[in-house]
Length: 510
Figure 1 (cartoon, rainbow, N blue to C red):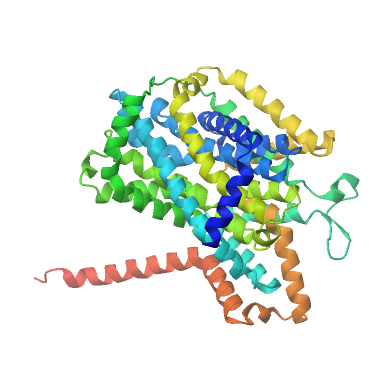
Figure 2: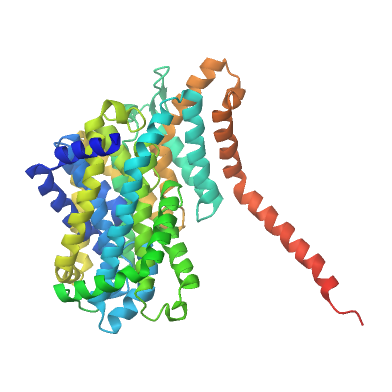
């Protein structure tokens, strides 16, 4: 198997003392970020991205991906011990995790959560190992129209499959497109939307934007909420771990189903949060112990954690194979790759084979290291939540400011970071999603370039988007996804009308 051979080469790249050390540092930082409510994987990767500027791309991506894995693991700690979901996708874990902790079974709940997370991620990495190269080979046949149609499908999927208001998604995406348009036109060399300000010639740096939007925005909201923590204590030892592992095989059907749900929601822009809720709902409906869900059922912890990690990991597949991120964190990682001069997409598998397979190998090792770290350090991370947030918040803000300054060594970037932080805070208060904004900021100029190249080839004929079955089917699917909110409402209206019409006929006639 060609993939297995390449994977072993990837292990050889990753298994150096430097990369293994970075792996454990990344996992530890990630768990810390996951434990602190609200920060999240995307925020943590965005804040800590400047730390990796001096590293090789492989070492940097190993550390950043391990921060991501660590954040995924860390969210379960607060959910189980404090009934505070560290991440949005950990909300479903609180339903049964916290009741288990109240019964004195916190160690059992955490072991089940961490092990299920590992299984979900492992299954997703297996899928990436064997599927990503095939997707990349297929995508090598793409030209400008095909690439634009895929970008269009990604943007439209966020509108059609987003969990919020389609109008808010469109507004967020439009702002991202506007920010991506600032600077020098890559085709004509003309300046756009710079308003005579020389510093805007280089446009808005992606890194400054994400540090502000995610890091500062989240801190402002957390400071407003005045977080205070109180929770249960946990002690995990080898006996608890072993006893829990012995009972987990009985939930194998739930694990398989949750992995499939998570992978589907990860590859599509559905994301980890809907995956965890969907998986919890399916498990509750199909389990023999469904009536006990919400009262401290281990299966109620297994389902959401497996699905969330499968989704979080699967989101990296479209990012690697097509250059299209499937989640906000994948979008931040994509920006990191661009900063290091790497172009995610099908050519990455050809031109940077060593890097790609090193990254995939690090996913296996990072998850294994993450499971080891979280099982052995739960009491330490739980005690961090007893530090007042008024001490933690300024430290994070200073780290964000240093990270923003190091991008161009310019004070303007710190002011821009704060401005983006205010935008992020306002978006969160008004319940506008940030992910479409980041997606449009990262991919907006690439989609524009592909569209303009396609128009140059076709001499302005937009029908090139239906020139062959491949591009035509992707473009049509994209337009269907864009109109999906309207289509689903029309279908619901028709069904409602049909049921009302049928109702009188079912009434007895006197």
